[in-house]
Image (cartoon, rainbow, N blue to C red; front, side, top):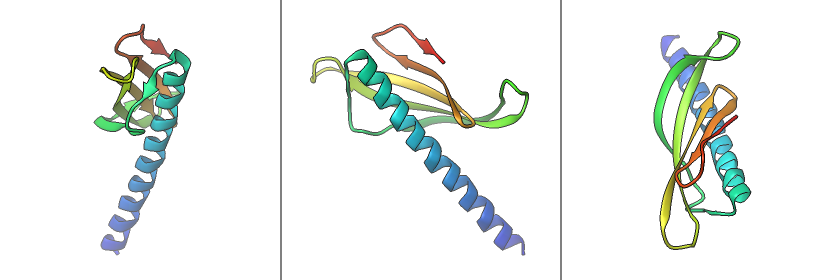
Length: 101
């Protein structure tokens, strides 16, 4: 029974991680479009994962992703975004002022 429970928990985590990553890709692409820069590699990479409380004082997964973009098609810049639970709460592009949502 414990093995089945462990497998179910692992599947639930994997599904939530996949949803979060897709949300991060969409948010990064949207932010790059907003500033007129090119979102590179069409992907994001998880750099930090922890638990944190949201504005309603509920525990949520806190994920920080990085991505790369270019302003001229040659030079790469770094961007970061933070997701807390089901919401993107912060996006920062290296060459622009931080945007807090």
